[in-house]
Image 1 (cartoon, rainbow, N blue to C red):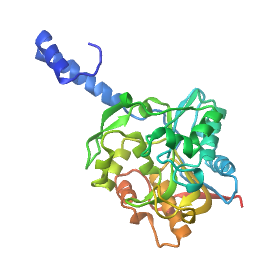
Image 2 (tube, rainbow, N blue to C red; image 1 turned 30 degrees about the horizontal axis):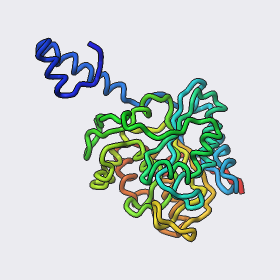
Image 3 (cartoon, rainbow, N blue to C red; image 1 turned 135 degrees about the vertical axis):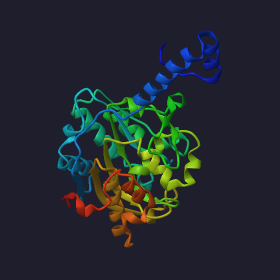
Image 4 (cartoon, helix red, strand yellow; image 1 turned 90 degrees about the horizontal axis):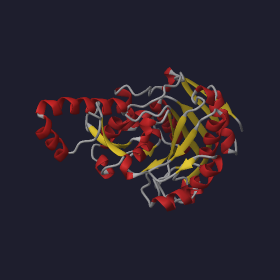
Length: 321
């Protein structure tokens, strides 16, 4: 029996023809196989800490120097890899408004992957605003194409219910299957204020990879986000903190809300990357803010997703000012 997707009608029809046991056992095997296949592929060396570049006026230089400090792109991308890059392209806003990932940073990461010999680089997101407009206004559509990546709208047919074995608030969710089929997944969030979550960074950027009723995630949000992150595990996170939206996020900021922070943070530990983001945001806004104040980071640390205490890891900062 070939491993295929069965709906209730197909299952009952097969049971009548072949007998219940002859149908159920292969069907269960298929479910197990499909679940096993929906795991993140492509292991990469784990960075023992974080690599941060700061101070340069050029965001492309910040990216290149931060990744160099992390060991170089060849440490993460191998020749022939199919790489998915997931920026934040959620909003119909320009780069200066700091609601989406900086397009120059996305372009540079694509170029680095190509230089490392990636076979193909794919770029996509599931925006909150109309997709064509968000892709265009963010500037990411233009720069991604310029760098040689495939950038396209996510296909509704490629979402599938994925089991979340460690889930506490949610046990399964519809997720985009391409992220499990690629060799590497690189998360490129932007650091910014968020009216509900307080801050949106790497962990929350994963929400652009899920389908279903995303609004329902907002009930028990922190735990549900952690549950999703136990399954969606980017191989590398590159946080854009070049421009930081300090208020009225995620998409209603004014020019007065945007601070030119000139930072790029690189790491393989999503909790550590987001924890540094909280620390940086607190410094920029002069707030006594720690990672423990962001509930989803605290819960993610308790779930074993990464290190929240930055004093326990190395933080390599490169000053380019």
